[in-house]
Length: 250
Image (cartoon, rainbow, N blue to C red; front, side, top):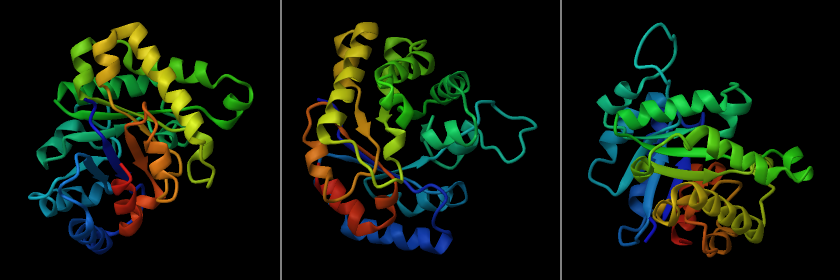
């Protein structure tokens, strides 16, 4: 059975005090008896304290990004080894904002994936089409190419450490949301694409999250779709009540 997952990407939000406050609220409010993996991704400067704060909880801490190189003259960057050294074993890679704002290409993201897996990290691999791609009816091609160029060089066993996060770029931070039917259609396509390359075991066991303006009032309907295994949550992850409601919608 695939793992149900709700991951909160905090992006560039929450200072140290605010991070501690939100973590305390989540510890108090999140259920500890649901069969769902809960992940939070604070900013780099708050990762170490978050790991310490959540040590005896069922909440996993993830990084929002990492550099593909082991070390070197890359001012301002963070390596896999640095993350591992503070107890962070999960990383988000390929987020649409990294692709569009910081010009990360599929080849760079594939390199990052390889580095993370080399360090025994779990990768939340993000991908998805922009509005013009969907308007031009190229959304399936875009998604297939991103999967192929970012992940299809991996061997089958590497997929045990891959979580997929489909994020229609036109539905991130815009208030727009793909309908549950659109989400299911794309998630089913993603699973079929993986099936054609890797076979049934990989396709049926990989968790595919939906990321695109998931909120308490639409989460249950989106999560009810057979190929949607949870969500990568943005803005709603910054409010404990909203995030908890989304977790409870699984």
